Length: 320
Image (tube, rainbow, N blue to C red; front, side, top):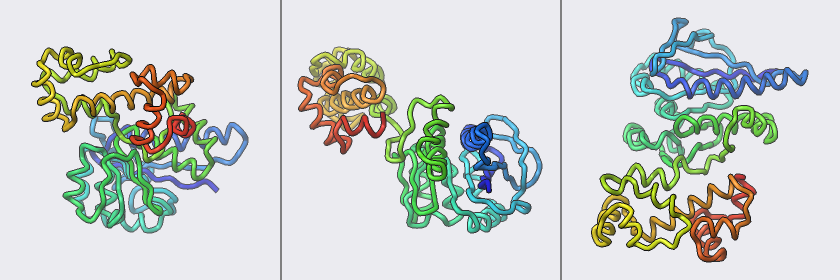
């Protein structure tokens, strides 16, 4: 019998959170039907009433069921969106969702849907993921939760939560993998033209992106210049010259804005660059070390393991 998937929509929901999950589950069912197998899922949109629901960007969807009429669900999906923080103030809606959540096998939030998950009391003393930009606000609103601002998604018992937007896709595929296996989940990811399937313990953001969001003024173009010259034996004087600063001023500003020394920042950039090469190329580890600016493959492997917890070859097997 098909598992019933319910996606709750409300004014100000994030369309991508809804459609990514919807598409993955329905794709799994379409593939099964094409193979003359029973559909594994039936997906429906649930809302407070049957009235059209307008998303944060103006897209309007029609719910299939209401909170009062929904029957058996196996999975309840709580998408994020601008309206999530307002929704948790609506006691009648939260109460109705709480009743439904107690009857389902799994509850999953996407992005700021974590606020709704927490409002239902399902994240008490649990680790919970959300979009990194809203992690502090979520922690302040629900101090009994353990907010993980880095993880793509977190799974504890039957409660699931993910970071922003595309991380919801990773979480949905994880749920499908639990039901249908790795091969089917990977095939669906390929059908969705995903670059790669990512496990929950992957970071929501990369080191270059972190630096780009932290640096200001003359340092704004630093990451771009480092990537452009990543293979070179870069000195502090080279990096200072990239941004037209003296070495002394460069060191001081970099530490002030990123809390890293030039050496620390450069090594993190090289390791992040190498990590991308491991999953996007077939080059040998020695070649990747060279292309990332490391003088020695041994040094590269040692630093990589210290930073990511696994050897480069193991990382490629897991995530490549």
